[in-house]
Image 1 (cartoon, rainbow, N blue to C red):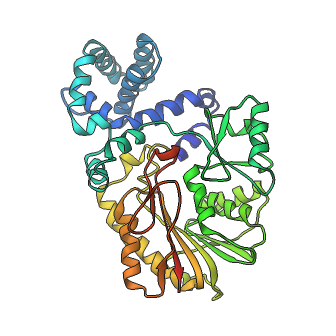
Image 2: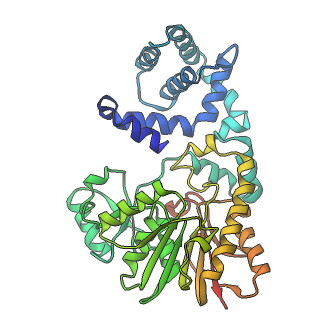
Image 3: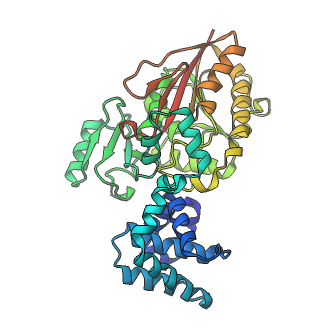
Length: 408
């Protein structure tokens, strides 16, 4: 969705209403399953035209969730269908029918499991299976707007000084007690308004993602491998936290995403050795020299970052998880030989599914005699049989999983 919006905002007309358009797109994705249920109650047969259906959902979202006057929401949505004249009367009828019968329609939605929490059935079932006590809160958090979190560049300034700089700009923010670089803003602002953004004093990054560099415990002279590194937030944080590395090698299979790493490092005036390559096939790019630290930010379902990327609920399917598990296993097995004896591999995902997290690490430890867990002692998340899990919304963080493995 981000790529689609970026493309749309190149149009100057769309750029004028950027905040409103973003709110509509993200909002409809967050509430899609509820809105879709209600729309189907209002139609005699399903809408086959995807553009018209999208407009109907946008209209319903405005009527229920936005402070747009009903007559304006209806008239503007109908106007947006002007290129398909046949659809104007349909959209007008649907939206006005909703206004007449909103309470009844909402009550029906509340009684439908998928519509009630606005998630696909398979995702509800997976979260309930893994986290029966926390599932309701996790599903609720997935539909909330996330806070804007920042990573202060401690190589250039202190968190106290940066919070002072924010205060002078009348931007409210607070520090995160368990992560030395993290701050959370009282409300989101454009990155251009953040003091020193262009000079690399601050980066936008969730507090949970910032824990990776802390857990990796890099030391001067270490050679570090960052696998599946794009878009480069963790890469940059590692370099900020330890400027005296021998080398940091960042690998990603996607050349276009590698460009994002280059852009981030350029803004922050940092350097890493960048390799476009398949993490599961290190024989194609590894120079044979071992690493003291490896960060494996494994490809995953992204079920822990749905609140930031609500289109995941529409795009991800239950059948996607097994291939991701296989890919994670293949990469983990492939990069383990690259780790020096006594070195540490940090396995990370932005998932809340046990199959991608603790069960993956348990299976790896069972088949590798030279791997031992280095337990994480922390005040955040929940200790698991292996590693530590953060569920979406805990301490204002996205959902993440971390496990540290030391090579004997």
